[in-house]
Length: 130
Image (cartoon, rainbow, N blue to C red; front, side, top):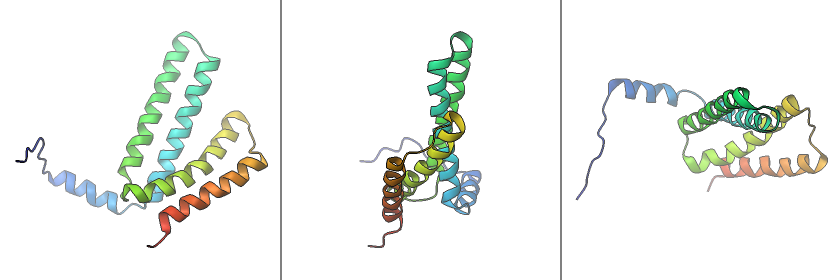
Protein backbone atom coordinates (compact mmCIF):
# COMPACT_ATOMS: atom_id res chain seq x y z
CA UNK A 1 0.00 0.00 0.00
CA UNK A 2 1.46 3.37 -1.02
CA UNK A 3 0.58 6.63 0.63
CA UNK A 4 1.24 9.78 -1.34
CA UNK A 5 1.79 12.68 1.00
CA UNK A 6 2.42 15.32 -1.63
CA UNK A 7 1.69 15.29 -5.29
CA UNK A 8 2.98 18.38 -7.03
CA UNK A 9 2.78 19.05 -10.71
CA UNK A 10 3.43 22.53 -11.83
CA UNK A 11 4.61 23.94 -15.16
CA UNK A 12 6.74 26.43 -13.19
CA UNK A 13 8.45 23.57 -11.37
CA UNK A 14 9.35 21.92 -14.68
CA UNK A 15 10.70 25.22 -16.04
CA UNK A 16 12.80 25.73 -12.92
CA UNK A 17 14.16 22.18 -13.15
CA UNK A 18 15.06 22.69 -16.82
CA UNK A 19 16.84 25.97 -16.03
CA UNK A 20 18.81 24.39 -13.19
CA UNK A 21 19.95 21.54 -15.44
CA UNK A 22 21.55 24.10 -17.77
CA UNK A 23 23.73 25.66 -15.06
CA UNK A 24 27.09 23.99 -14.48
CA UNK A 25 27.27 22.25 -11.07
CA UNK A 26 30.51 24.03 -10.17
CA UNK A 27 28.52 27.30 -9.99
CA UNK A 28 26.32 25.85 -7.24
CA UNK A 29 29.34 24.44 -5.41
CA UNK A 30 31.28 27.70 -5.46
CA UNK A 31 28.25 29.65 -4.25
CA UNK A 32 27.48 27.00 -1.58
CA UNK A 33 31.01 26.84 -0.22
CA UNK A 34 31.37 30.62 -0.23
CA UNK A 35 28.13 30.95 1.74
CA UNK A 36 29.12 28.19 4.17
CA UNK A 37 32.60 29.48 4.92
CA UNK A 38 31.41 33.10 5.11
CA UNK A 39 28.54 32.16 7.44
CA UNK A 40 30.90 30.19 9.65
CA UNK A 41 33.42 33.07 9.72
CA UNK A 42 30.72 35.59 10.68
CA UNK A 43 29.38 33.38 13.46
CA UNK A 44 32.90 32.66 14.73
CA UNK A 45 33.75 36.39 14.84
CA UNK A 46 30.33 37.18 16.35
CA UNK A 47 30.81 34.76 19.24
CA UNK A 48 34.20 36.17 20.19
CA UNK A 49 33.98 39.85 19.21
CA UNK A 50 30.37 41.06 19.70
CA UNK A 51 27.76 41.29 22.44
CA UNK A 52 24.11 42.25 22.74
CA UNK A 53 22.19 43.37 19.66
CA UNK A 54 25.27 43.15 17.42
CA UNK A 55 25.75 39.50 18.39
CA UNK A 56 22.10 38.73 17.63
CA UNK A 57 22.19 40.61 14.30
CA UNK A 58 25.43 39.08 13.06
CA UNK A 59 24.29 35.68 14.32
CA UNK A 60 21.19 35.95 12.16
CA UNK A 61 23.24 36.99 9.14
CA UNK A 62 25.53 33.99 9.66
CA UNK A 63 22.52 31.72 10.02
CA UNK A 64 21.04 32.98 6.74
CA UNK A 65 24.35 32.40 4.96
CA UNK A 66 24.50 28.84 6.30
CA UNK A 67 20.93 28.25 5.13
CA UNK A 68 21.94 29.58 1.69
CA UNK A 69 24.84 27.13 1.61
CA UNK A 70 22.54 24.15 2.10
CA UNK A 71 20.03 25.52 -0.39
CA UNK A 72 22.60 25.97 -3.17
CA UNK A 73 24.27 22.63 -2.47
CA UNK A 74 20.89 20.92 -2.74
CA UNK A 75 20.14 22.71 -6.02
CA UNK A 76 23.26 21.33 -7.74
CA UNK A 77 21.97 19.11 -10.57
CA UNK A 78 24.37 16.28 -9.75
CA UNK A 79 23.94 12.94 -8.00
CA UNK A 80 24.68 13.43 -4.28
CA UNK A 81 27.53 10.89 -4.20
CA UNK A 82 29.31 12.75 -7.01
CA UNK A 83 28.70 16.25 -5.65
CA UNK A 84 30.26 15.40 -2.27
CA UNK A 85 33.76 14.86 -3.70
CA UNK A 86 33.73 18.04 -5.74
CA UNK A 87 32.17 19.92 -2.84
CA UNK A 88 34.97 18.91 -0.45
CA UNK A 89 37.61 19.98 -2.98
CA UNK A 90 35.86 23.31 -3.59
CA UNK A 91 35.34 23.82 0.15
CA UNK A 92 39.06 23.54 0.88
CA UNK A 93 39.98 26.15 -1.74
CA UNK A 94 37.24 28.62 -0.75
CA UNK A 95 38.04 28.09 2.94
CA UNK A 96 41.63 29.16 2.40
CA UNK A 97 40.56 32.29 0.50
CA UNK A 98 37.93 33.35 3.06
CA UNK A 99 40.28 32.52 5.93
CA UNK A 100 42.89 34.83 4.49
CA UNK A 101 40.38 37.64 3.79
CA UNK A 102 38.60 37.38 7.16
CA UNK A 103 41.36 36.39 9.58
CA UNK A 104 44.52 37.31 7.59
CA UNK A 105 45.59 33.70 8.07
CA UNK A 106 47.98 32.05 5.63
CA UNK A 107 47.92 28.29 5.20
CA UNK A 108 50.89 26.42 6.61
CA UNK A 109 52.84 23.86 4.59
CA UNK A 110 51.00 21.06 6.41
CA UNK A 111 47.62 22.58 5.46
CA UNK A 112 48.71 22.98 1.84
CA UNK A 113 49.96 19.37 1.58
CA UNK A 114 46.84 18.06 3.33
CA UNK A 115 44.71 20.30 1.12
CA UNK A 116 46.38 18.88 -1.97
CA UNK A 117 45.36 15.43 -0.80
CA UNK A 118 41.81 16.62 -0.01
CA UNK A 119 41.41 18.24 -3.43
CA UNK A 120 42.94 15.19 -5.17
CA UNK A 121 40.59 12.86 -3.29
CA UNK A 122 37.58 15.03 -4.11
CA UNK A 123 38.46 15.01 -7.80
CA UNK A 124 38.97 11.23 -7.77
CA UNK A 125 35.58 10.70 -6.10
CA UNK A 126 33.90 12.96 -8.64
CA UNK A 127 35.54 11.94 -11.90
CA UNK A 128 36.62 8.29 -11.44
CA UNK A 129 34.89 6.14 -14.05
CA UNK A 130 33.92 2.68 -12.75
